[in-house]
Length: 210
Image (cartoon, rainbow, N blue to C red):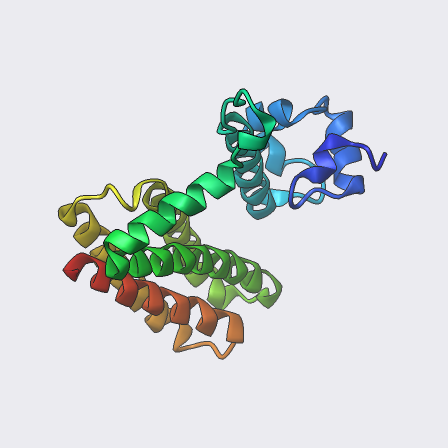
């Protein structure tokens, strides 16, 4: 079972791969086609893990499709990641300040997304009625934020100043709502979410004003 292709996907171990196989999901393509709701319904997965698995599958498929066409001479072949690095280095030489801000923004977006997901997980063991309203509010805003983050990551370099300002404004509103919620809580995970959001807002503001 260790040869199961599904175990190559982040978030899927042997046990989950077996459960997915039983549902008729055998390949990465099958995993990409199944709806988020159906994937979340599989035992031990749930909505948050389903979102992570879907994102991981998309990255794997995109990477496969993005592989460069083979060149005539094997020795002249350039790895796709090497090409990306070369392009990044060219941008860095042309405009080092913008490149540095872009790199920080990309890394910060990843941190925000991870922290928001950790925040959702941190809510689960609380099991108190007084947190239910906060959880629903946080979950709704987190879903919108993650959707927006995905769009931003895909086209950060090509965004207009107007679009960047809209994202920065949304980040400010989300951060404020987190401050109000987390003021009532002492959990480290929630503080981390807020810290990452603040960092992202500062970076994006710098990028807009550049």
